Image (cartoon, rainbow, N blue to C red; front, top):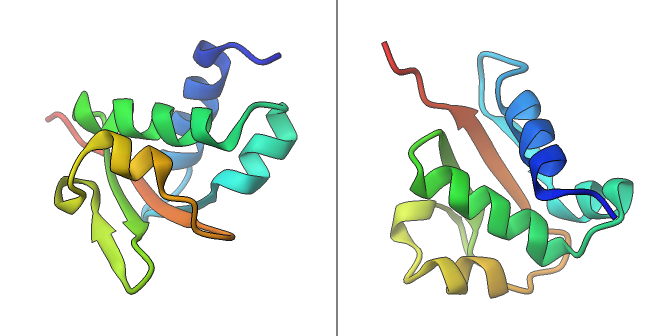
Length: 93
């Protein structure tokens, strides 16, 4: 099983790999690292709450910023098929 630190490093690597927000499929990350998809979503939520990344996710109708979700649990528990998220690093200059 992959540690949360390894998962966190990979999410940050993907977020910082380009100038535009990275499109991350939690299903693919979950399968590649052999972790539950909710673990990937939970780590994304933590990074957003720690103000390390900007995060937007599909709510079933449209892409919404993480801050617009009712709660971290609602974000993590959203069971939308083939959900993807837009992620980019926050610049702390």
